[in-house]
Image (cartoon, rainbow, N blue to C red; front, side, top):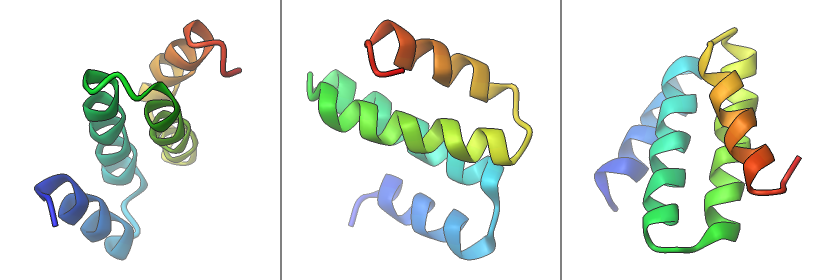
Length: 72
């Protein structure tokens, strides 16, 4: 299991929406680097949802990236 996976599972277990959003954003960035746009959009959508839940300003950036990808 990768560090990103461990971070994501740990953040979920703690119920830390802020950390979950960032872990999903990291996963989205990794998928995008590998040019897997569907996977990147999947993780980015989750980052957006958890950022919204945490009232985190990151939500706006996630939404904008999804918009540029044609996903919202």
